[in-house]
Length: 65
Image (cartoon, rainbow, N blue to C red; front, side, top):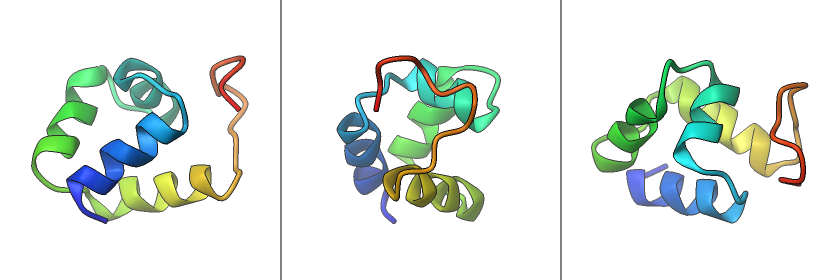
């Protein structure tokens, strides 16, 4: 997954960078924007693919299905 594809996936899920950072366990949104600008770590790609397939953790933002 390229950084652009990662960003498109986030946007397609209707999530802000801060919301995605929270559900992925990152400290703040800057980590998401770094991923979208540089490279996608394998674990971030795996989580994103799970979210795209319909997985929603308990802390998923309300109304973002």
